[in-house]
Length: 266
Image 1 (cartoon, rainbow, N blue to C red):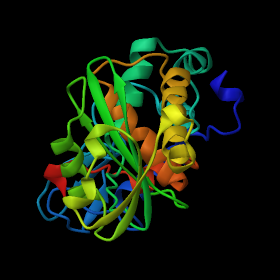
Image 2 (cartoon, one colour):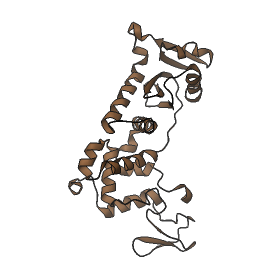
Image 3 (cartoon, helix red, strand yellow):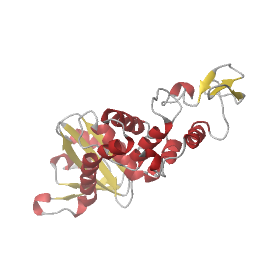
Image 4 (spheres, one colour):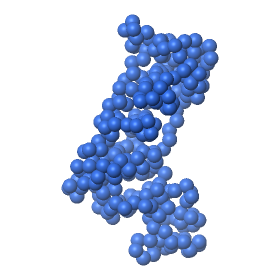
């Protein structure tokens, strides 16, 4: 099935893509960074300066990979294209545990993009199995900020701390009529407007409410369920997909934006 997909290149092409993503135009030693490197036997390299031998993936977070390169690329392609876990299993012929393991590796190696929001900002909370999510969106843009709390409610102090960290002074904040937002403009220089949902007022919070709906749909469609442990990762992935869709254009664009080299080698 994988071999029939035109999106999956040959193993030689994948090795070229990986080398370009890891080392750029010129090969260098991942230990001492010398460019005096020779090709050794069995697809390995030898540094003439520190005399270390290394392979293409030996100093990356892919170093212990047991998958062949085409199956790895197929899994990465499915993940970048948001193919659900069950569909990926049918396509790639690997088990559910393997798919979830590699989807998690792709998630945790995404670049961390933290935004400070300004202008007009909508803010709200959502709740998942004794876990609270605070999220804000800058209107008319793809800029999002969020915070996960391991508890079943959000208080005013936590709402204020979120605003201090993620919303610029002199912004225009729009929320629902929740008590945690009452008098919030006395604690931070901003203009606060609110919707009263029981009066069927939703205009000021429509975009952030839509984000929560899209988040729940994404988790249910892509991963089918979540736990308090996986929720922060799923929310982070969702927000990066929304704010930086260019990262997910292809496996190659993901690899260019992911830090492949292990910390000890950088």
